Image (cartoon, rainbow, N blue to C red; front, side, top):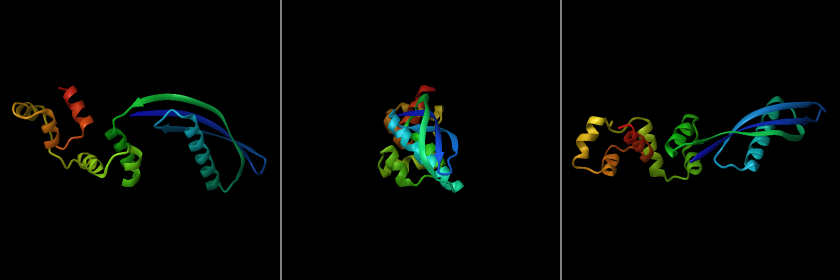
Length: 150
């Protein structure tokens, strides 16, 4: 899963005929500039609402793609979970079923059996990697990282 980081600057022409400039860092799951524009305009309007001001026009004057990160679904889950997003929102964003969400939650909350290198080598003699992963309830991406570290 790719995560795109953008830097966007906007200029707002307010109803009291003054100008104000805002800068935002936005993360998206696709490289669509239209999605970035919608997010930035929404954030700008929310900031102005908090200040009790209204905008006549919002202009995006600068957009720059800062970085592209490759993340696993579990890593994305951790970021969403730490921002206290509701379960349904996380499921919709990641497009995962409820049982997978529960598996991620249990692993994140450390409600699973810990797997050590020594334990893995002992189990490897009579179990396949997939059986070991399921037995210890480890997400696939985390298990792959564990194997790379061996």
